[in-house]
Length: 316
Image (tube, rainbow, N blue to C red; front, top):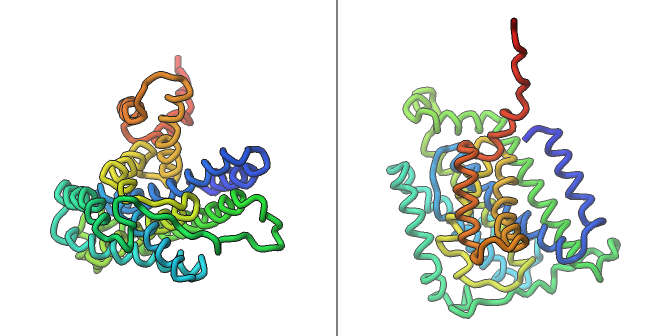
């Protein structure tokens, strides 16, 4: 994502509260949360080459951690930071197998953890509310008085989500353009060659996994604020799989791909419902996924250079 695309997207996001109604603005807040979760997958798989089919776990950890921290009457900002850190630490633990396995084996490990998360979560009644789920006390998440948004909490939620997601995008962009980012990409291209040049491969993998999980944890914490009812079933393996597929169909080679993938994740079922084509959102998502992969095997963002190329002039 270049600076002009980012500036245009940010400008559009700032203008949205002025032109859309409350319900649609709340939907855009949820899209921001999803974009952040997909961005975490993008950073891990697109940069390091590690395939995670269980990133929904970290979203769930961030969400339930946020709920429990708010129960302790912690300030929202402090709770958000701690919930993010807890998801990041969980990412470090999950990353340990990646030092010994790779490819489909790591994917199966993370998928297995995603399958286990809901039943394990239901056994942690005080933390997750068991099978019934739990509500989140967001009473302390009020807009500052000087903004005069007491009657418009949806705008405040939207602004907070926008700021947090934009901050993560900026951090990710700077990371990928830094010396650390080049070291991480070198690890993806050839581990042994990277190690020969003095790159700590184990640290690169573990660190990227932790940052990626922390992003997902932040997404979960924001989700707990926007939709203050949580259930472990919302973070099952299908959710993790959709996060991964959204990153792939958006395009793993660009930060813009995370945005496009999240929009497709939300947009395909919505478009299907609007047009009344299929009676199942999952069927619509799956069919749309097949079509996108056939048309754009490198992701939707991968189509942009193709359309931007000028046709070769004919020579006589």
